[in-house]
Length: 607
Image (tube, rainbow, N blue to C red):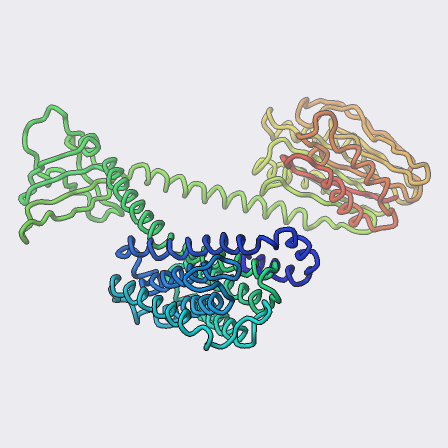
């Protein structure tokens, strides 16, 4: 991600040259000062890498090779003389000129890229290199290069002409970039072999930044342009990434080791919560901590010497876990570990840790009970699924039902006999397994209904009597049932405390609310219900639903009832009923603010 951002920013410098030129022009007269400040930052980072590596050599030598730190020491020296001899700087030993300054720059880049490539491709070559020797060689190397440049700069190939890089400089910059690209390729290719992903990541970012800086140094046409400054900034980013690698190795890694040791000690202290016993070689108990004393029921005032074999349980054999016998004779399941205490190659005693397993055994028992309960729930869910699989959803009648949990507390059924169709929907208060049982009772009752002889209120009254007889008093359900005659388009309906169902007439764009008087099922065994009748027109749509569909706890004033009616108004009534039901529940859910806390069911009938 970081490399992509750096690349995009780099590309923008070339895509919008006019913008950046206008942005840089006001400060271009101060380019020499800007260059000096940027180089000071670069030199500071390079020298920080060198000095930090010198100080933390023992901690970081296996990860940040000392030869690379020495190379950055040379880079810092060469960059210092490059900055002092840059065009426009005051006289320093010799007159400032692009010849000396640029050659010192090139030598610094080649040094840094070459050593980095050597370290990455041959990590073991300089692993045992002495720190003093590395920095001594680095110092001599730097002095020799500076002496060569100052003495023979007039004979060296020209690198800058009229402020722009020559072909020679471009080739040298490309060599530097290629070395870094090889490093990046090698690190990516051997990613699986790297021990530290973070270190490899920052190495790659650093090398990529310096490659991008070479792009700027190849393309600039004058030393005082924004491209020249941008190249130096990318170089600083690259050096900063190498410094972060050094920080991770020499500061963060040792700190993490200290943290691990600290955590390990904390873990050892936490072991004091276990029962701890120390004995001599004969098994005589020398020390018992408070946890072990409480576990073994050893009286605090007891002064006699106890033997460890006094607490060995005879019931251990054949058990799934070990047992230890308390001082009072009670058997307790425990996990025992014994460690010998050795001194001068002789066992002088034993160290015991005891962990009480009673809670673990109880948790295991509860887990097994949960498995049985889960199995029963899955069985009940399968029964519900089998019941519902017999109900077909299609052109005239469609439904959708989503249980809040595994078992559905909503009941729905479609019964067709000749030209008559009975649709029933119910919301059962007893969720879970009781709901599954009550569902089976409902199915059994519906199977015996004669739609040509019975009215909805007779069916509801029968359900109420049966429910009151076989269910507990705290269980109840709301129910709505209707019988539709396809020949006459007459709809008979009865409600037992259920949400009012909706009849929508497309031509009038109006709703009729279907509701009747009658208590919820299970409240009163002799409750009286009534049947009402409505004449449907062609293409009317009847919608039955449970309260879970329209309830929204995040809404303070209203629920989703208006959203349901709006969805019905906007639906294409030529669609099949099952498609309409799915569409309605989807549209209503779009407007929900709070979480779902109940089962949701909707049934659609088309006249």
